Length: 201
Image 1 (tube, rainbow, N blue to C red):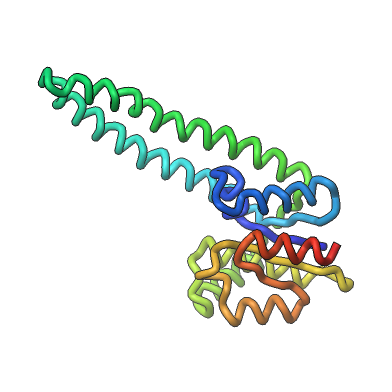
Image 2 (image 1 turned 90 degrees about the horizontal axis):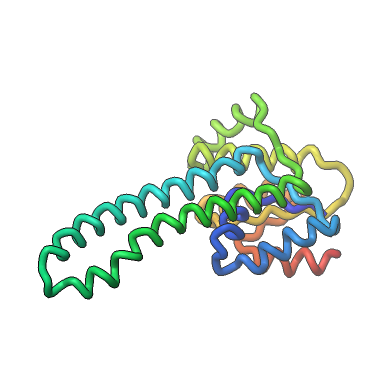
């Protein structure tokens, strides 16, 4: 079985979100060579942008909090309150370091067993068309174009699955029907995808 994933699969694992257990099991099946895991190479960079963006937001919060604590510290009545919040300013920054470390470890695992789909000129050209026809953002259009191109290239009757929690963009009738026409099922959550995968093994 071929399972297509994208950036939110990586983030699900890295951030230990609500469906990370199912995502971890899917990755485990790939590591056991029971399924083939494919992802657009473009998807590898998106999690870095996401984590760095969250880090910048936290740094802004930290700076605001430090300024407020400096003001509070001027009053002897607030010393206890300041002592409670002061350690949190460093903890906020440490989160990004931990997330980045987890991202690197997750990608290392994924790239050892996964197959990346590189962006070709035809994939890029098709992505522009998908932006216009399906209303996809440029990143999502490149991801979908990469996946559907690879789906079309597969021969034989091997089962195929595309799973993404980005249902707002990918769970469109046109996308689902195009995938199904090439024997590829779309799932908008990792739990359901995992159940289907187990049923076909």
